[in-house]
Length: 137
Image (cartoon, rainbow, N blue to C red; front, side, top):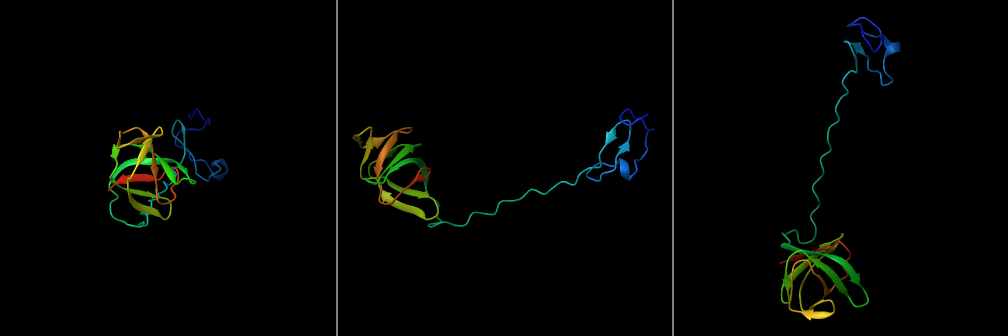
């Protein structure tokens, strides 16, 4: 006897005893649903190539702030950076440019080298936004 419905084993229910989704239950000492069809997983389309589709280089940091009146970006470094290095800033729809590091500041003091983990102020030639990535070329 089925404990769930009080019916003999292996008895198939009729349509009025089916579930709201239309699956018919069969009693095998417990109530079971008909297996539901699995959905296929969507595959992400490859990203469209951005400007300068070549490899950007080694990631050295991310932009955390931008002061538009003095055109200075604040960058949180994930690798050391020094004056004279060539960097590439990428982000958004159309921002992708290279520039040389001419000067940088850490806590309002001019620095020649900045270690990993520091926030530096860097004069940039184009507008940058929070989250843009900075690469060493």
